[in-house]
Length: 75
Image (cartoon, rainbow, N blue to C red; front, top):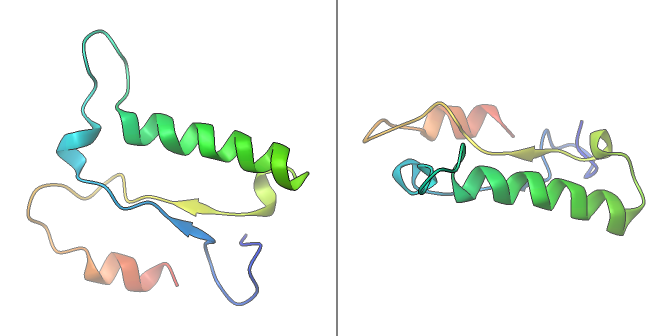
């Protein structure tokens, strides 16, 4: 559920999937870690539970796949 009325998500994280590949011995890439950190920082800063707003990043798309339909569905 989004904090902003009439929207499904409040924040869309755009990133290249290959750039989210884990570095060295990490389990996850920087974009995934960024979303987790942002979620916690927003919860603290806004004083809301993490379910009060919605952050969306398309974790399933990859390569040269078209994502315009997926983006349109997230409005």
